Length: 426
Image (cartoon, rainbow, N blue to C red; front, side, top):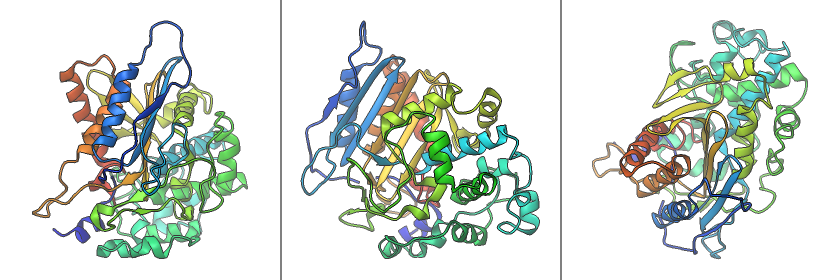
């Protein structure tokens, strides 16, 4: 199997370069009493991700009032500028949790019925049988059967070429056009039949928000989700540029872009409410803590968000998923990837134990010599180990290995796996 075929059916991850900067970490705030977080272990595990080949990575972990944040590697491979804690990051499909929260707020207000056909709200956008059979809930839990628009939006990817990524860097594409492309893509099943990740679902959710609120969804989400959660460094970009300190974002696309190219300047209209948010790791922890703590939606709405369907290695709710890590318990959150940047955020159900991490090199995996898949990556192993170190500090070596393997299996259905990338986004 050649890479062009793999790219046409799957897409997302990270590469390897020996441009190094000393690992650096800084505690967000000193705490009194014994530390709940193992700071030296977190420092070491973060540095190990860079040592494995990641250009740069930053991370924030929390256990109650105890906080740690760190960074390792470079934000710019040309200048050697180091990654710093608190840099802004494109978070890809973690944006879907923000969109789902906004929709659930409208459910609470009686303006949206989760089990109503989407055609009741957007009859011109999704007419006919699909509009009658696909419900709002099916959009949010990815059981709609609607295909993904990404290959339609970047058609060269289906032919093993990344030319579209550069040709359309400054293109502005309307969300209605993204939906048209998604509806024209092959279906992934009958409505409600099975889980199949599709960015089109969350573009439709954004247009649904626009219809029922009378506002563009970015404005609504900013006022009623981002501001309400107290996020000071989270926003939708209004230009192709990221405002504030940030790392460059390098895309390797499984070796098709060699050396990896910087995509930090990019028109994100192609991601819309499915993946265009910019944030920081500390803001992401704050966001999920606010959500799980009932500050953004009430108990009934949160219960709906946490009502899941079986997905690849995890349970997917409404814009949020649950991972069960052996010896550690259940964690809620999401991951995300765009060209050149990957992010993950996970929280315990009570929001006490959290980790969020972001990195700046994507699709670094290498194709197996027989063309049947991708070689195991030392970067993936190191990333998973860091996440487990943050979430499960008391794990024994054996249980830590088991938890790391469980996390890797769970992420095979998400943006952070090369075998999931019909999406490019998340």
